[in-house]
Image (tube, rainbow, N blue to C red):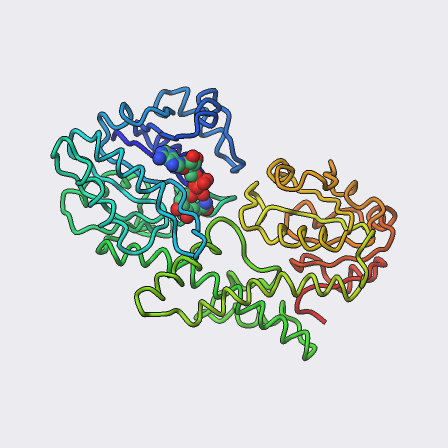
Length: 433
Ligand SMILES: NC(=O)c1ccc[n+]([C@@H]2O[C@H](COP(=O)([O-])OP(=O)(O)OC[C@H]3O[C@@H](n4cnc5c(N)ncnc54)[C@H](O)[C@@H]3O)[C@@H](O)[C@H]2O)c1
């Protein structure tokens, strides 16, 4: 099939590359010329495991193209994906300016029937809004169908997630669009990873409800972690104990520093805002968001308890990315921790395997270490922010010898308290005695 994708970010680029790998002709459009020039040369502008190999192969075999020219990209497209950013506006609502701009471009230049599939995470009702914008700008009065096709991939395993999804959701009531989307996803769907059709609005709600449920589990466990500390229980034992209950399951039960990233925080804010405007407020999600914000403060307070006067002290941070296996620092909890440390006039030394370049642009004055060990030189404390695997098995004796004070604040609970204390560290973690 001939596919055009607007937006070459984490979603658009992965979707485009994977769909090309299934044998489709895919053109990816972006307004960021620098990004497109890089991509044309086969260089991937973001870190996503497995993506560079797949992209290079499909560019070489001439199934995957990149352009800033939206008009030519629309010429023969059978399916047009909208995968542009939908950031939070000041008031927490979803800023739809990029989606609107794509809809306008499609309206102005579409000259044949096509399915327009919205992959961006958008408020309920956006498919209708896109339809209206396209119609308003149409010069050629061709028919088209806007469907909702929310994306569930996770950064860090995006290629695998796109090619092997738990399910694919398509919201449409148009039979022609249905059969085109069925054809499009033929190479991906299986009995165990089905394509599910719903009405458009339910598909839009599914995306928010999914992220809201996952965020709720995280805040739920973080609140229980605080309780465990008060009563002397261990949140890891609690997570294991409840996770084995098949009605609950083990995933998304890790207490820590709370959620971040480009999705959960903005999607929770987005659905909270729409709930309010629709007169159906989400009380539980209000608490989820609040607990998540508090969790960052909770970790800072733990540090202050050990080092009351941070001014002039050296604090090492391991991990900046909002989670392992990505270079994405959007809404990462680390950013709040860094801001707190700078406000307290601490010296900050950081190491992250992938996210240092993006962080340098925000905080040029930090010390950016080449290795996890270098970050520890002269440190009064180490805070583990992101649970990259590299941090799990490092040489504890070497770590201790580099630090001024062997204090670890493990905000992701990656070490075993007894073991690490036996190695001579003062160790504080989340929700464990
Ligand atoms: N990142 C994720 O893990 C993830 C997962 C599921 C869903 N989503 C949703 O998918 C959407 C995209 O997320 P992302 O992380 O890929 O965003 P991103 O910020 O990484 O990429 C968005 C891209 O769209 C481009 N763009 C903006 N306006 C454009 C236009 N008019 N024409 C063409 N390109 C344009 C930008 O230049 C940018 O390259 C968001 O709605 C997000 O909530 C993201």
